[in-house]
Image (cartoon, rainbow, N blue to C red; front, side, top):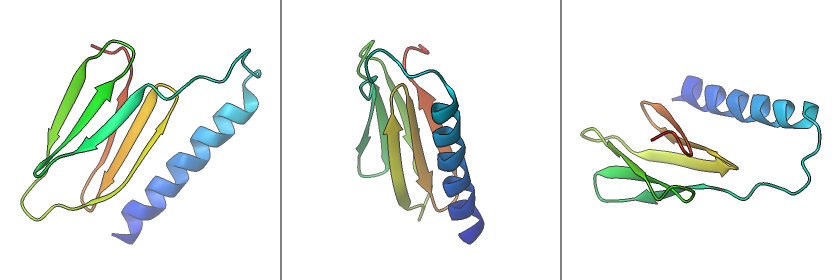
Length: 89
């Protein structure tokens, strides 16, 4: 569990570093991925195209955290790290 948390924190730090190195955008990009937590699955909704991606949760699998920034959405469970991007179909 600790390794997964450390990986999640590292990934968030890398995303922040990448964003800090890029040229500042003319306007800040709104979050386009929204997570919905259902009984036994995660649903990622793409606000740009209205598409969706479903990820079933395994038996006993628990959601730890979700994160969305711009066109990237990340969800961390006790077992997996899931990522989606907007406009990918």
